Amino acid sequence: MAEFEALFLPAGDGWMPTAASLGPWGADLLHGGAVSALAIALMEDEADDGYEAVRYSADFIRALPLRKLDAEVRVVRKGNRLELIECEIGSDGKLVARCSLVRVRPQPVELPEGAPTPHDQAPPDTPEDMFDAPRFDPNRTFFVGAGIEMRVPDPSQFGGGTAWYRLMIPAMPGREPSPTARAAAAADFGNGVSGFRSTEFIPVSFPNADLVLHLSRQPRGEWIRLEAISEWRPDGIGLARGRLGDREGVFGVSEQSLVLSTAAPR
Image (tube, rainbow, N blue to C red; front, side, top):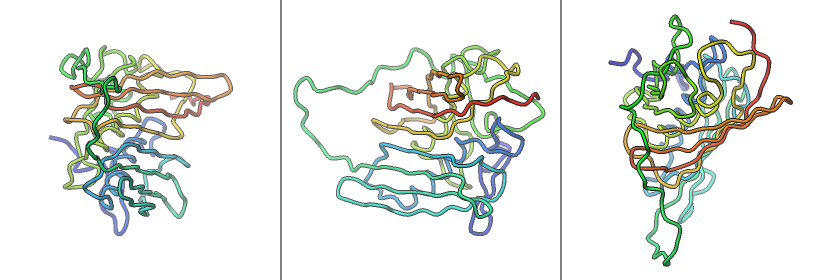
């Protein structure tokens, strides 16, 4: 049984993060995947049930603090086939993240012969083939292990380029994570799963300034597979690119802009 009820708890008109939402970049900083799960849940509250998410984006304008978060959601457009919803998340009067969700209403289309086909080939591995991800610090609580389960090919390596993820608790109490939220929570690990190979200290930190997902369909089931690669440049800019799948095949792609800097020793 999970130790935490949810990643975030109601706090007046806002949301208080629990320790299950903490990331690796600071003792009091949140993981972007946890914040994305919250933003998606809030935007889906304003969404039309007849539409399906095709893109999610988040700009992390400031470091995400372990403090009460306030959210403002607005429907930018609701048309016959497309709706756009935005969510601004702030803390202490400062904007920390701006998120958006593009959703399309499915409509039957007769495809011509030779049209591109979905990537419905099952992946070469399953979560059951893999191992629990190694922990950076057994004395600290992280999103990995407390909020989301992470399974890797090698139990000694966090970043082997491929991992499976399963949200263990909802973003908010009493609400099952949606498929889009599960995908976004996993996709935010692209820089980590492709950025280093062990739990040993490295002298560079590489948080992502944003996260963008494009989905060809909604994921099916609790487990999300992420296969990612990163490139780092000596000018302090990087890029992580991911391919998202489930037990049935590939359903989307993700990208993260990385901000590289010298890391303080642990």
